[in-house]
Picture 1 (tube, rainbow, N blue to C red):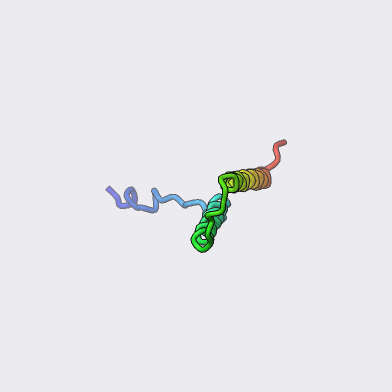
Picture 2 (picture 1 turned 90 degrees about the vertical axis):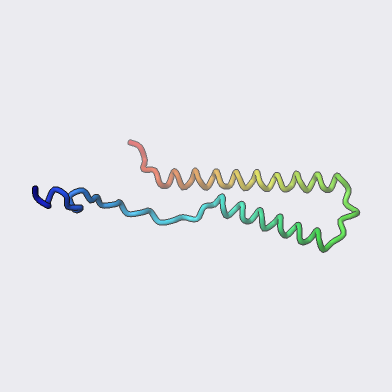
Length: 91
């Protein structure tokens, strides 16, 4: 029996180089949303909102939902654009 059969060099494989890290847009968007919510909470603790009617609160929630929808659309457009850029043309 020879030592060449059990050498680690015979079974070692070379790993492919890793792609560079990219920032995740979804994480950035959610971070911004949380910052806005925190700013609203701080403002609510500093200002008396006793005069707000339920209509104002409902419209605020609708506006916040609209911002989320727009952020989702922007994220989808950015992902589609980078996917098209990274994929080679067919044919």
